[in-house]
Structures are given as C-alpha cells and as structure tokens.
Image (tube, rainbow, N blue to C red; front, side, top):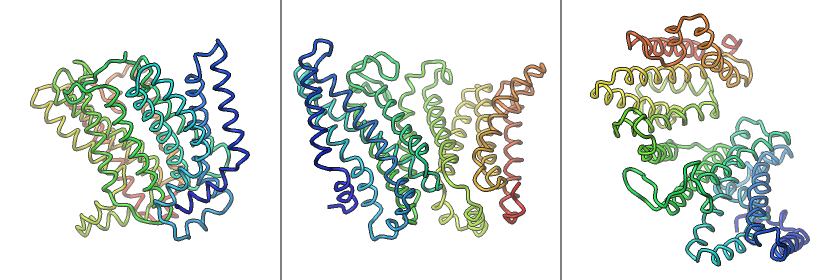
Length: 444
C-alpha cells in the first residue's frame, strides 16, 4: 500500500470518529424518512455529500501540504524516497479518506433513491457525477495549495481557507453545468442533446465524459506540481496536451455563439473561441508561474546559440499558451482578411497586441519590483490601463485616444492594432533591459 496514504489513513480513521459518522448519517436518513418536511433520505444524502466531500474534503486537501510546511515536516518528506505520484495520491486521497467514507455512504443512499425514481442507468450517471465532483473539488484545492507551496505562501489558516474556496468554487461550477438533476446547463435550459463540432450528442453522457477528462487533467496537474516540489523537471508535453484539449473542446461549441460571434462564419468562430481559451490560459498561468531572472537569461542564451529544441522544451505554460494564442489569432486575422472584414481584422490584431503587451508588463513588473510584489504591481498597472484610463479619455472627449488602451474601431482601421503592437514592443524592450541588468540595479 502507498505509504503516504497508509500514514494518512492511520491519522484520519480513528474508530470513534467512524462510529460517530455512521451513527449521525443513519440517524439523519432515518429522520428524513419519517419527517414530512423532507423529500426523503435521498435529499439529505445529497446535502450531506456536499458537506462531507466538498466542504470538509476540500479543507483537508488544502492543508495536506501547507500544513506540513507550517509544521516544518515538509522538507523531511521531500527528502524521502517517495515518488511524486506516491506523494500526490497519498496526500490527495489519504488526507480526505474520512470525508470520502461518509460520502460513499451518502452516495449509496443517493443512487438507491435515483434507482427508485428513474432507474439504474440514471443512478449510474448520478454516481459518476458525484464522484467526479468530489475529485475535481478536492484536486482544485490541492492544486491551489501546491502552487502556493511553490511560492511558499501557505502558512496561515486564512490562506488554507483561500485554497479551500478554490475547490468549492470548482465544485459550484461543476454543479451549475453538469448536475444531472438540474433544470439548466450553465443557465441554459436543459436539453437532451448538445451540439459539439456539428454533432448532436446525448447531453448527460457528454457532460460526464467531459467531467472525467477534466478530473484526469486535475490529477495530472497535481502530479506535475508535486514533481516540482520534489525538485524534478517537467517537460512541455502534459501542458501542450491540456492546451490542445481545451482548444478542441471549447472550439466545438461555436454553434452556441449565434451569428453575432464573428458574424456567421463557422471557421472564424472556432478560431476565435480557440484563441480566447488560449489567451485566458495565458493570463491565468503567467500570474501563477514564477518569473525568474536566471531562467529568462538562460532561455535567452539558448536562443542566442540556436539551441531551439532545448529552449522550447523548457518553455513555461504561459509561454506555450501565449504562442498558441498568437498563432490562432494570426490564422483568424488571415481568415478575416479573406472574408474582407477589415474592422474585425483590426480588432483581433489589437487584441493580440494588447495581450503581448500585458505579458511583457507582468515580466517587467516582476523584474523591477522588490521581493515578490511583481504580480500585484502588474495587476495594479493593468487595472489602471483597462479600468481607469479609458473612462478618463472618454470624459476628455478624445474618443480615439481610447485605442491606446482598448481595441477600438478607428479611422483608419490600422490605428488601434498599430498602437497596441507599438506598446507591446516598447514594454518588451524595457523587460529585456531589466532582465539583462544585475539584480541589485534592476529593483525599484
């Protein structure tokens, strides 16, 4: 048996706690069966599952690593002979084994209730949904705590609560989109079939397969971060696979966008959706990953010596996502040029320019700020550029000037993308200059 899992089982599965858990759940189910105010044991079991697996389980998962850091036992564990996979499985499911036992009891009651109401097939679908919900919620909490552990920001109870909130938020998203008993799918009325890449697929099996895929990527992400904690090197393959999956997955929902999304051209809509998800992952990961001066210098040296394979293999996730967004955006611009949609072509070009500028801005702020305040400083500057400057320019009745901060249709149409790319070039020149400076001279 996994030694880390076994250690957590010894700590969590105290006999008295198990007896109390089973007794409380049985009493709740029995009371619900006899009380007219409840819809039955199935309803109580669902609420109890959310409390045990989502609320309690995410808290245990969130503190499984940062708690070790707080107690100063994490370094000794990292020096042990345990593999990253062993550590990840042991932390994720060992620390949450007690909530999962309670959740398993609730799941039996839930499935029995569904069998009576809708049959065995519906019960299997709901069972798979609840298991995926728990895995994604707890995996998201552990993922957030591992990211914080890499930045060594996980010592206080408040921060553990923040990582727990990440898992609960993931569970809420899953519940809003994939709950088999829900009346809507992400706010859209529930239908028996969903359109994806022009295919009409059964809704519930499609959503469950999607949940299984996302749960698998969640576990893979935890494994990769655990490898980094154990000072092992990750290759680009896993992130590229996830990025490709997200591009294909999201682009398949082009029919949901209607005719207002890049007019009515299906290819343009799919390229647009693929570019949006790539850009979104770029913004997310650039704030989560470390921006290390030594690494940037090494990367520049590899490119300078034309060691392209070695440099690309060490790309961070935000770099790969950014390159994908730029490539997809370039193809979209070419498609719009063929369709002779100059205004849309200029808007996409400006969006790509501003995204490139923002990436350079985050790097620049991290190279310039003291200690670890670069990301917060970059967020403040981006808030100023996107939230404050455009309204100020508008109040001054200089509407064209908004093109310096937001994509705008201008006359001539090339003015907005030209401004965006000039800003991007200027920011990256400053960022490269900061990277080249000695560290003592580069901080402000």
